[in-house]
Amino acid sequence: MLARLFVAFQYLVPQHLLTALVWRIARIRHKATKNFLITKFVAMYDVDVDDVSKRIPDDFATFNDFFTRELRDAARPVTGDSRSIVSPVDGTVSLAGTIQGDSVIQAKGIDYTLADLLAADIDEANAYLDGSFATIYLAPYNYHRVHAPIDGQLVSANYVPGDLFSVNQATVSSVRGLFRRNERLIMRFLTEQGPATLIFVGALNVGSISTPWSGEIRPRKRGVVEALNLSRASTTLKKGDLLGWFNMGSTVIMLLPKACCKWHDSLQAGATLRVGEPIGQLSSATQ
Image (tube, rainbow, N blue to C red; front, side):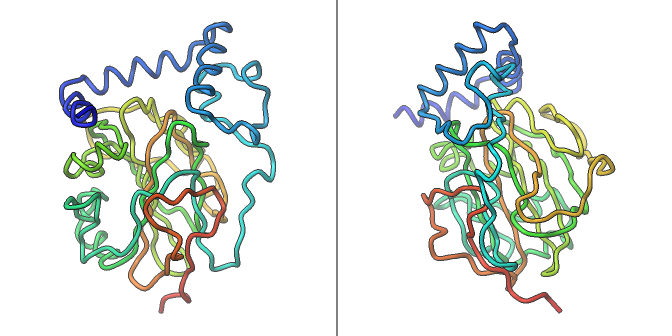
């Protein structure tokens, strides 16, 4: 009952206004206030702070500074051989498997098309027909930086305005087409195996998404798709390199072409992941 009420509430609440309010609260610099927010959050969500590189809460200027925290060196080693695919985030697998034609599964009985997800033309979407996908949820207590799962060249990054539904399990299981409705940042790569895409999905209370190329991207409900200027940082990436971070929690979706990879058997719904942990194996380079 509570889950259904929460989903219904999201249709009524001014999602962008609420998210803007959270954005402001998360950036309060008053020492006592931000320390209170950080310590209460750590206690409420039982946040694992063992790998945090700074003192908590004193070394963080704001709650958001803590939320987007860096970890100490070597806290997330990238493991596996040169063809391994590693987890881009700390999080929990929502779903992973094979794309059925152009249809990606969101939840039981709910799917969406590649073209809708990618906000792209049919030719671009067709690159992933019958390919592989993995959807990974970042809970509030997770480390919220996103890293490259494979080596590749970043060729484009587009911000798509949209809704800000929550991406928790109750909402994902109820709101049709949630991932194509919500705002998202779509990063496209060229690899030895062909194209690859990683998508940052925005959500309720996700104040913004940041990348080394764009700086901070604030949510907006409407407008045109915006192509990021990629000249600020190198676009040649190795596994484990930083791609960006969520200012509050959300979801990432990874897409790979048909016959490009094989997910490990352990990549099942509910599995817990850490950045750099092998989750699959790339095939030989495409012809």
